[in-house]
View 1 (cartoon, rainbow, N blue to C red):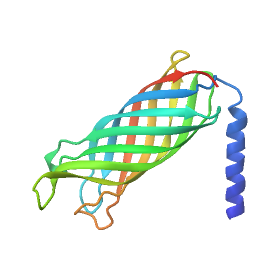
View 2 (cartoon, rainbow, N blue to C red):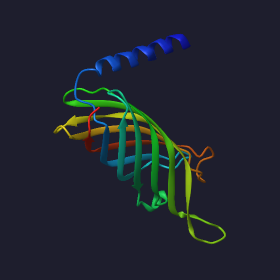
View 3 (cartoon, rainbow, N blue to C red):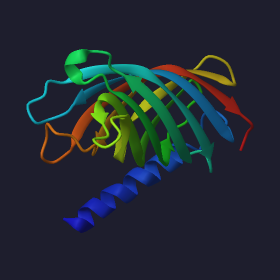
View 4 (cartoon, one colour):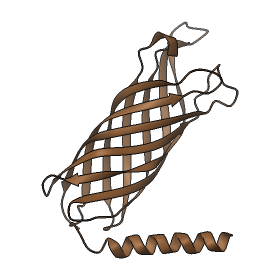
Length: 191
């Protein structure tokens, strides 16, 4: 079983690498700005809710296929029923891109954390509102469409985002979230 999975993974990487040899030139760096909407599934019987916001990304490309991503985002839900949370995410990791002349699909695996603030997170000693930091990870992908040589439009990026924010409504402190983003990407330099 492990051998089959290894062969399939090697075949996928070899195919993507070979296909990436043709297509659009590879930029040294990419900077993106996106509107993001995160659907949070808090678990523990609490209903899901949507938190709109935005995210910014920086990608450094090592070659046509592989790059490193820094993804920073902020999301807020103002519904009183869902504890009025504001979440800031900071995620980092690798990206695999398949560059073509007019479009670039990609997949990424990011790891980092989230910082959540809410009026309901109160320090019992001081009475001040506090924030919680927790582990987070995101797995997903998206598509960039060429507008010009240096400007690409991002119609879709979808990520499964798991966070481990300590809370009183769930025993395992796990939130399974779905993040949708759309925006614009600026490309700089050439490899």
